[in-house]
Image 1 (cartoon, helix red, strand yellow):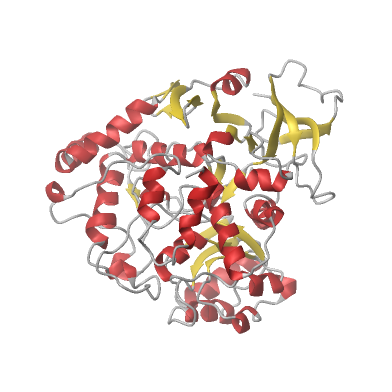
Image 2: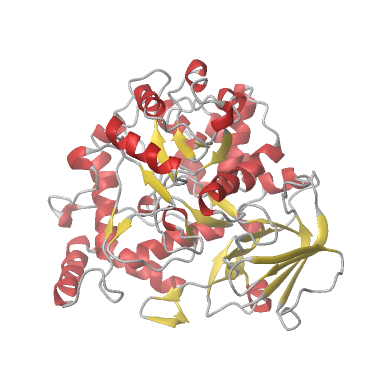
Length: 513
């Protein structure tokens, strides 16, 4: 379908990155941006009968990008280890905590195996509610699942190649890193969880190994890198600068410290943001921008609101474009048709309004030219496909996620939640039912109609490379599904937990709490 979004355009183009103007974004039926115009100029060919969504003075920005996540765990609430009295050292430290398996590994494994489609629908909805249009960190699957948010890990960008970008949440050996360096030399990207932990802890060697293997190039995207000292960043030559994905909430929650962003910036490394995952992160990067603002002020990083907005739009988009060879993260002709529309929030400049925006301010989330979530009237005006209703921040919204059993119908939010709640109430019974369903299927596991199977990643390798099953599913206790928004329950869970020294308590102020 073709679609026109009319409002206050914030294109973030390279020609004039600070520009804002009243105008139109024309989204073609190929999922790309056909044109971006100011004023009341004539539409391009083929748009005379296209639906027009006039959002008034609302802000029309490039689709929000979450460049670090672990989607399969996002049905879980914040987690903290009751027996841990000091910050964890690194990513192999907290996975050995006494409550980790029962709280995270086993609960997420049951949800992923007993209700994989509903789990992915739930976590994608959480992203859409925050205006997120593209996300990194999908679980492994036997066949492509229902995706309404752009899958950064497997984006083909109009080619037949699903390996334009390689990813790894596991620590790779020097030989494997050398192979990744060879692939990057031929144009591929590599998103790598690297040196996650306290400064100068043992995981610092992961960055050194990547540097020694020749990975520090323009298409290398390092996640975390919080154990890296200023002197280590000098190994990344400015002419070959790639990107850093900063997840300040998770860093501060687990380690009591975070990445040396200014030293990375001094090497011309592009700074992006990722919300990480449910157990130690924000619900989406709309909130992570606020955490980054708090951390910047506390640590003296000097980041502006415009810097923060760039981290979830053009900074991330530019480095991905090096691999996809299409503009991304900017509203420009020929770019991917991902758009987020936000209500104005406050009286500050456009950048502060975006940073202050909450879930209540998200009017429309469009992925590849398709309206997937938003205000009921905006979704109707956009002539969105089959969509069900849900209530967010006291207002009725519409959600366009096709039912996996009949993609001509919308998957009702109540039915998605009901499937997950049924697993919560009877984990063992739900697993037996799903196992019987899989055994009854006679075709190959990779067939389009095959039962979906998910494998959840873990931060450490070897035998623990994927989350494993519980020894007794009947004893697994799965907590209630968290809300889709940052609310009192979320802020109460922050206070007095984690190792942030109170810094993260400040997030509540952005939400009037």
